[in-house]
Every structure is written in C-alpha cells, then in structure tokens.
Image (cartoon, rainbow over all chains, first blue to last red; front, side, top):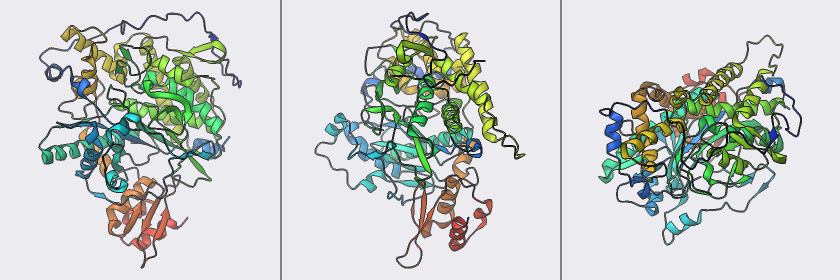
Length: 65
Length: 508
C-alpha cells in the first residue's frame, strides 16, 4: 500500500530521471515471447493461411475522429 | 468538490466506435458514399430522425468556441471535385430500439451505444453494436455483389486514424483544471491494461510493435479537435444535457478493444478517476508532456513502464494506477444515511482487484495476462505469425495479421479464433448481445429513448441524446428533455398513450 500524500506538485512516488532501470532498446521487438504454440491444424492456422501479407498495404481509410 | 451523494452516484457513460471497412474494388475516395450505403443497410428495426439542433462540437470546456474544426489534408484531397449530397443524408442517422445511434461519421459507420451507468452493461452494448455492423455489412455485400469486411480498430497503417471514443457525464462544478489533472494520468497509464497493440508505427521513430494503436496520432495535450492535431485530453464541451449542471468528458485517447474485459476496464478506470475528481481526492501527478508520455509508454513493451514527469522526475504506469486504487480505498463513501454500500463501490472493488492481478501478471511474465489484454494477445498472435512465416519483427506482413485480429466477423477474425481456442478471453454469447440490442438497463434515459422508438415512433419528430421531440397538435411540437441522472419509472414501459408518456416524462 502506498502512503498517499496529496501534495499539489505530485512529487510522490517519483525519482530522478537518470538513470532509468532496465530500459532496453525495443528495436528488436518484444523480448519475452511466451507462446503456447497452437496445433497447426486448428482454425487459427486455417485463417492465418488465408491472409495476404500485403493486405494492410492495400488497406486505406478516411481519417475519422 | 462535489457532495458525498454526488460522489457516490454512478457515472453515466457511453462509447462511440468508428469502424474501418473495405468494399472489394473501392478506395478511400469512395468511403464516404459507401459508409452512407452501409448504414442504410441496417437490418435492425430503427427510427430515422436524429435531431442535430443540440450538437455543438466546436465548444471548448475552457470557455470558448473555435470557428471551425481542422480537417485532415489527405482526406481533403480524396474529396476534391466530389459532392456527397446534403449532410443529413450523408450521415444517415438511425436510432435503434435500445436507444443506440448508428450513422456515417466521416466515412466510417459508427455505432454509439445507449448511455449506461455501469461499465459491464456498457461493454455488452458496445459488443452488441458489432452485430449491427456485421448484419449491415452482409446486406451491403449482397446488394453490391462484392466482399465487405469490417474492422474494429483505429488505424489504416498509412496515417489515417479513426476513433473509439468514450463519454462520461461529469458535474459542471468540477473545474476544467481539476478534471484534466485527474484524468490525464489515467489516460496515459491505462494503455498498459487496455491498449489494443499495433505492429509498427505511423509517426516519430520507427518501432516494431507498440502497446497502443492510437498513441501515434496525438499531437497536443488538450484541444477541441478530433480529426486532426488530436489531443490526449479532448476539450469538446457538448454535454447533451443541461449545460449549467453537466459537462461531458469526451475521451478520444482510447483504443478499440476486441477483448470484452478490456472495454469494461478502460471505462471503469476513467469512471474511477472522475469519481476521485468529484471527491477532490484524485492523486496529483504532473505529467508535463502527456503527448510524449503516451508515445513513450506505448513503445515500452516490457516493464518497467516508465512515464516521465515534470522537473526531470519519472514514475511508472503501475505506480500511477496503484495511486488511484489506493486513493479510492481510502475514500469514505459512507453518508451515514443507512444506505447499502453503493454499486459504484462494488464495481470499483472488482475493477481494482482485476487490474492489480493483471499488473502482477505482466510484471511476472505470466501468460494469463495475454488472455485479457489486447496488446499482449495480439503480440502473441504476431509471434506465431512470425514463426510461421520466418519473418523478423518489423516485417510489413505483420500488419495484415494485426488488421485481421480486428475483423469483427466471428467466422473470419483472428481474435475470435484465439477466443474459440481458449487463448483469449471468451466473447459474450450471441444471446447476451442480442438481448442487449433489445433491452437496456431500465430507467436510464437511453432506455426512455428506446421506448419512444419502440412505442411512439409515428409520433416522434426527432430524437437526440438529451431530448425527444413529439409532433404534438398542428405545428406545435413538444420537446421533452431527457435527464441524464434521473432514474425513470419502469411503469413507462406499460404506457400506450403518447400523451401519458409525455406527461410521465415531464413530471418530476
């Protein structure tokens, strides 16, 4: 449980900006895959096989709100 | 600060979701006209006659109005030399039997739920909307003889975004500053628990995957815009209720969720922040640059989820969320009036427990979290797609799998396949969603709007969020306000005479 101190400037639970712990480069993508790889005969794989890899390249929408 | 009774009151809320869609052989220049056709294919019984007189999207909570809202210049190019007809015909507004609204908004079919007090009810209404979309899409496909696909997402991966908005009714007595300070930290931090995930990026530096599908599109901390230069905190002042008593918190910063509990969670967290604002008990965080903070957090796909604060301080999303939970747990909601503990208290306790469990699961890399959080569930899917195709993170094909995660057709969408396999949280049963389309929580003003459409459609001259207008005698129309905080009497459903119906609505 955190000790609430409702000070207006919000210094509670803060630390100096440098250094941040554990900050890694995210360029390589997620680092901890935890896949329960489904059986390749299942419905997910059937649907995945139908997907055109260029589908998102062709997908264009209007800018909404 | 509001009265204790006001703090205990549940917060009326609703969602508005703009859906992406494709029609075989058509491009973005066709989508405004096609979205009108789409909406007109609605298969559910409905009323045509939305009343636009009370809409003021250019009014700003900070006390001024802008002359016009900005438009996306790319969209303007699509429309060059084209005429779409008059605006009411383009919008093609429909009001459903449950009080929901279905219309064309800027080239997207949009489903706006009826107002609900509880996040779980609202989630069901939100998911019921997908039935309306799917039925209309199937009908349009049959009419055109072309394939039509519908996506509940927020981006076309080319820089065009469309919204999944939330609305919360807030007492006018809460100042803009207090509301802003209470809500912005939650809007930023909640993406860890409610983000829909996105392969790639559409602004700033490149990244292979991020937590929020919407974060790339925010450019300002606060403004009234929604189509261009979007803000983290939208200041549109359009309460759809008595403006002297109410303001509407219009949240445009959220992602479109496929996982049901993610919808409930994102609504519940903002309700919690508003409740704390009403009590004058919201934690005080000073996120100096909310735009940079949400973009930075969105790209932080492994804990700790660092958020920069003012004066070169920093914290984490977990600590911000926990501060709201702790603040609520210290809030004394006992009015001493002998009433049972309020429903909001029970809802929030469930919400807080669920959020804490999920945060612990994320921290400990427990795979269970991916069943309940879209960005983790999608990440799992993309890891499978990577392995199957021997792709690296960053391969453009992953965006196609991302897109199909959001396909709302249960026989095609990848989210639905994951749910059927037990790899994602189960979807509400079709019967539950159909029931939500026919019935809504009795007593809300959304319920009254739906009743009017069901029973007195021929007598209606217009319907909107805050009003019903009846034809009356001769030229004299009768306008009846729909009060957002009133619990209307269940006996209204038994009235068969329109005059008696109006009398009951106007009696206090």
